Image (cartoon, rainbow, N blue to C red; front, side, top):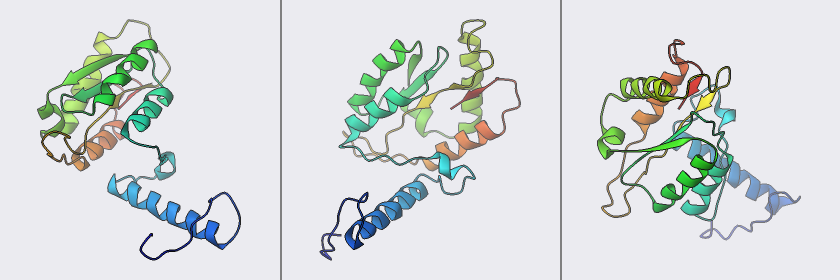
Length: 178
Protein backbone atom coordinates (compact mmCIF):
# COMPACT_ATOMS: atom_id res chain seq x y z
CA UNK A 1 0.00 0.00 0.00
CA UNK A 2 2.69 2.49 0.95
CA UNK A 3 4.82 1.62 -2.07
CA UNK A 4 2.10 2.73 -4.46
CA UNK A 5 1.28 5.84 -2.38
CA UNK A 6 -2.45 5.34 -2.75
CA UNK A 7 -4.19 7.80 -0.48
CA UNK A 8 -6.20 6.10 2.24
CA UNK A 9 -9.03 7.52 4.31
CA UNK A 10 -11.54 6.66 6.99
CA UNK A 11 -13.47 3.70 5.53
CA UNK A 12 -16.66 5.00 7.15
CA UNK A 13 -16.52 8.23 5.17
CA UNK A 14 -17.53 8.82 1.56
CA UNK A 15 -15.28 9.48 -1.39
CA UNK A 16 -12.81 7.66 -3.61
CA UNK A 17 -10.06 7.31 -0.97
CA UNK A 18 -12.56 5.94 1.56
CA UNK A 19 -13.90 3.45 -0.97
CA UNK A 20 -10.36 2.24 -1.79
CA UNK A 21 -9.60 1.88 1.92
CA UNK A 22 -12.76 -0.12 2.54
CA UNK A 23 -11.98 -2.32 -0.45
CA UNK A 24 -8.46 -3.00 0.88
CA UNK A 25 -9.80 -3.82 4.34
CA UNK A 26 -12.37 -6.25 2.92
CA UNK A 27 -9.75 -7.90 0.70
CA UNK A 28 -7.42 -8.33 3.68
CA UNK A 29 -10.23 -9.81 5.76
CA UNK A 30 -10.82 -12.42 3.05
CA UNK A 31 -7.09 -13.22 2.98
CA UNK A 32 -7.13 -13.71 6.75
CA UNK A 33 -10.23 -15.94 6.57
CA UNK A 34 -8.51 -17.96 3.86
CA UNK A 35 -5.33 -18.30 5.95
CA UNK A 36 -7.36 -19.73 8.83
CA UNK A 37 -9.42 -21.93 6.47
CA UNK A 38 -12.65 -20.12 7.39
CA UNK A 39 -13.68 -19.43 3.81
CA UNK A 40 -14.83 -22.97 3.02
CA UNK A 41 -17.42 -23.03 5.77
CA UNK A 42 -21.04 -22.28 5.04
CA UNK A 43 -20.86 -20.20 8.20
CA UNK A 44 -18.09 -17.90 6.94
CA UNK A 45 -20.26 -14.94 7.89
CA UNK A 46 -19.98 -16.13 11.50
CA UNK A 47 -16.26 -15.30 11.49
CA UNK A 48 -15.49 -11.68 12.20
CA UNK A 49 -12.04 -10.15 11.72
CA UNK A 50 -11.20 -7.54 14.34
CA UNK A 51 -8.07 -5.41 14.13
CA UNK A 52 -6.34 -4.60 17.43
CA UNK A 53 -3.18 -2.81 18.45
CA UNK A 54 -1.36 -6.08 19.15
CA UNK A 55 -1.50 -9.59 20.60
CA UNK A 56 -2.25 -8.48 24.16
CA UNK A 57 -5.20 -6.31 23.13
CA UNK A 58 -6.50 -9.02 20.81
CA UNK A 59 -6.34 -11.75 23.45
CA UNK A 60 -8.01 -9.53 26.04
CA UNK A 61 -10.80 -8.72 23.57
CA UNK A 62 -11.38 -12.42 22.91
CA UNK A 63 -11.43 -13.20 26.65
CA UNK A 64 -13.79 -10.30 27.41
CA UNK A 65 -16.34 -11.19 24.71
CA UNK A 66 -16.14 -15.00 24.64
CA UNK A 67 -19.42 -16.61 25.85
CA UNK A 68 -17.94 -18.21 28.99
CA UNK A 69 -20.20 -20.46 31.09
CA UNK A 70 -19.64 -22.47 34.24
CA UNK A 71 -18.56 -25.52 32.21
CA UNK A 72 -16.37 -23.58 29.73
CA UNK A 73 -12.67 -24.38 29.57
CA UNK A 74 -9.76 -22.33 28.24
CA UNK A 75 -7.06 -24.69 26.89
CA UNK A 76 -3.58 -23.54 25.96
CA UNK A 77 -0.15 -25.18 25.46
CA UNK A 78 2.93 -24.31 27.48
CA UNK A 79 4.37 -22.29 24.59
CA UNK A 80 1.96 -19.34 24.47
CA UNK A 81 2.10 -15.58 24.52
CA UNK A 82 2.22 -14.43 28.15
CA UNK A 83 -1.02 -12.51 27.59
CA UNK A 84 -2.84 -15.85 27.26
CA UNK A 85 -2.08 -16.38 30.94
CA UNK A 86 -3.91 -13.12 31.66
CA UNK A 87 -7.04 -14.61 30.08
CA UNK A 88 -7.28 -17.10 32.94
CA UNK A 89 -8.51 -14.45 35.38
CA UNK A 90 -11.43 -13.53 33.12
CA UNK A 91 -12.33 -17.20 32.64
CA UNK A 92 -12.33 -17.82 36.39
CA UNK A 93 -14.48 -14.72 37.07
CA UNK A 94 -17.08 -16.15 34.69
CA UNK A 95 -17.04 -19.52 36.44
CA UNK A 96 -15.01 -21.35 33.83
CA UNK A 97 -11.75 -23.25 34.15
CA UNK A 98 -8.43 -23.39 32.35
CA UNK A 99 -6.07 -26.18 31.40
CA UNK A 100 -2.44 -25.98 30.32
CA UNK A 101 -1.55 -28.90 28.05
CA UNK A 102 1.68 -30.30 26.70
CA UNK A 103 2.81 -28.83 23.41
CA UNK A 104 2.39 -32.29 21.83
CA UNK A 105 -1.35 -32.05 22.59
CA UNK A 106 -1.40 -29.07 20.23
CA UNK A 107 1.10 -30.27 17.62
CA UNK A 108 0.51 -34.00 17.55
CA UNK A 109 -1.69 -36.04 15.25
CA UNK A 110 -5.07 -37.53 16.05
CA UNK A 111 -6.83 -34.23 16.70
CA UNK A 112 -10.42 -35.34 16.20
CA UNK A 113 -10.23 -38.21 18.66
CA UNK A 114 -8.36 -36.07 21.18
CA UNK A 115 -10.98 -33.31 20.95
CA UNK A 116 -13.89 -35.75 21.31
CA UNK A 117 -12.26 -37.35 24.36
CA UNK A 118 -11.51 -33.94 25.82
CA UNK A 119 -15.06 -32.63 25.29
CA UNK A 120 -16.65 -35.67 26.91
CA UNK A 121 -14.08 -35.73 29.70
CA UNK A 122 -14.83 -32.10 30.52
CA UNK A 123 -18.52 -32.91 30.65
CA UNK A 124 -17.90 -35.65 33.20
CA UNK A 125 -15.93 -33.19 35.34
CA UNK A 126 -18.68 -30.56 35.18
CA UNK A 127 -21.03 -29.90 38.05
CA UNK A 128 -24.18 -32.01 37.70
CA UNK A 129 -27.16 -29.99 36.47
CA UNK A 130 -25.12 -27.02 35.21
CA UNK A 131 -25.45 -25.86 31.62
CA UNK A 132 -28.46 -27.99 30.72
CA UNK A 133 -30.10 -26.72 27.58
CA UNK A 134 -27.49 -24.08 26.83
CA UNK A 135 -24.58 -24.37 24.48
CA UNK A 136 -21.22 -24.59 26.24
CA UNK A 137 -18.22 -23.22 24.36
CA UNK A 138 -14.57 -24.00 25.01
CA UNK A 139 -11.62 -21.98 23.73
CA UNK A 140 -8.31 -23.42 22.55
CA UNK A 141 -5.55 -20.83 22.16
CA UNK A 142 -2.72 -21.96 19.89
CA UNK A 143 0.38 -19.94 18.98
CA UNK A 144 1.27 -19.73 15.31
CA UNK A 145 4.91 -19.14 16.20
CA UNK A 146 6.90 -19.53 19.41
CA UNK A 147 8.38 -16.21 20.55
CA UNK A 148 11.40 -18.00 22.01
CA UNK A 149 12.36 -20.67 19.46
CA UNK A 150 10.66 -19.38 16.31
CA UNK A 151 9.00 -22.78 15.86
CA UNK A 152 5.88 -22.52 13.70
CA UNK A 153 2.74 -24.51 14.30
CA UNK A 154 0.51 -25.79 11.52
CA UNK A 155 -3.02 -24.87 12.66
CA UNK A 156 -4.85 -26.27 9.61
CA UNK A 157 -5.25 -29.81 11.09
CA UNK A 158 -6.55 -28.32 14.34
CA UNK A 159 -9.02 -26.00 12.59
CA UNK A 160 -10.34 -28.88 10.45
CA UNK A 161 -10.63 -31.20 13.45
CA UNK A 162 -12.55 -28.59 15.47
CA UNK A 163 -14.98 -28.09 12.57
CA UNK A 164 -15.43 -31.85 12.12
CA UNK A 165 -15.96 -32.52 15.83
CA UNK A 166 -18.49 -29.70 16.18
CA UNK A 167 -20.30 -30.68 12.96
CA UNK A 168 -20.54 -34.39 13.73
CA UNK A 169 -21.48 -34.39 17.39
CA UNK A 170 -23.69 -37.36 18.01
CA UNK A 171 -25.28 -36.07 21.18
CA UNK A 172 -23.14 -38.12 23.49
CA UNK A 173 -21.45 -34.98 24.79
CA UNK A 174 -24.40 -32.58 24.77
CA UNK A 175 -24.29 -28.98 23.56
CA UNK A 176 -20.54 -28.50 23.84
CA UNK A 177 -18.43 -26.77 21.23
CA UNK A 178 -14.73 -26.10 20.89
